[in-house]
Length: 275
Image (cartoon, rainbow, N blue to C red; front, side, top):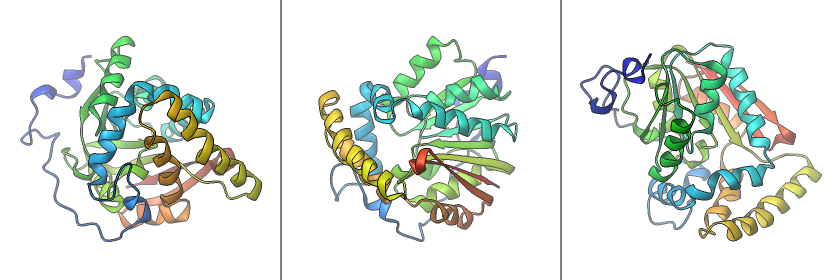
């Protein structure tokens, strides 16, 4: 079964296709601290700066991910997919798909019959993702396109699951992003968010701060030319809403049965919600 059967006329689809939809403009109602944390400066849009940053670090991204988390990020993704798998989704949208690690894992573990669509702001990251999928022989089941979660071009209820791994803190407007993900989910569909978070234990937090504020930027400076990108990481993690605060944003967007599941001393959290 080819991908073009799953997504008819995917390459030439337009807003007239039932899969696509001209997203309405949604005015954000709350300003969150995470929205003001930007990679490079305070004057340009966060969306544009995030795109620039990930284009810059795309070649080193996977290596840095493994190094920064000591490989535990793979376990976090696997746990999230197992939790999502209980709903048996058949058509999945992976937002902020990056280099495609979660999209590939979703296919391998869940094998959704109607395929996986991954979107990302960064063409550089998507180039890496497409190579991975092609090398795995899965281009028939996983597709990628440049897209912004704040203005999705998919129809209402187009997917029965939406996933975001380590991407919510990069949204320029959290309320609008969650509202759009809610819109494209079918009734009963599940949202699964995996996001880095800050531990609450005193000793754990002390060690975490040393690692994120000093070691990660140092390694980033050695591996990548974009030093600022690896200072933005701990700043954005510290600023993004966490725990109950994140669940309240989900509820405000219309989600129900919102739960959070902290992992590894609270350094990562899985959020699940239902439309």
